[in-house]
Image (cartoon, rainbow, N blue to C red; front, side, top):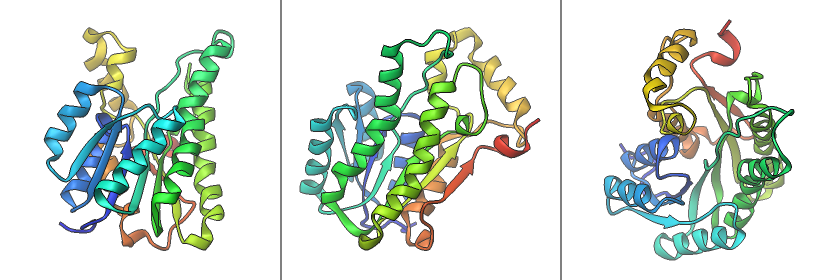
Length: 250
């Protein structure tokens, strides 16, 4: 298993959920690098599971100085970077009738502005021919209740894959985006009372064309493809990894 042998990767939000699923898949294919997160405990636990080839960097992706520190530290430890996975983000729950300006600014800072500057601050440390992997959401395609603002931010992220690829043609750095649907991550715990989580997951599974919700490993396998030379002819593309939810669900 060496599709990513000796490739250096940085994964934001790599300490749990989809980000950790990607980090684990990368490790299994021979990559080294850094995972980035804000929670010390989950970051340390994730690094312990990944082993010696990954380091954890405690950082806030909405802080420009933190982003610069992340890429400088990774390059100092491992050398030039081959893959950047821009995964950190979170859903803002609410409607246009009740989300405040503060909610708006926090949501855009985390889900859109941080994506732009994560890529910008990574570029000086990246090899030509590298891969940038953005994480979208099928909320950009389906108008789910209470996810208007989050969905709009993710729709812009999907465009970034096209724009970044065009901006970076001379360096042969390609950007693509993975768009997950409902995925089994700790995010459920933030929005659903503990006693309701399993029932909510079962409901989502019942409306998914695949009959199940996604797993972080599903996204990890797709990220390996986009990080590897297998996808060298792809740039600006969106890969829907949502169990058919966007186009096939009723």
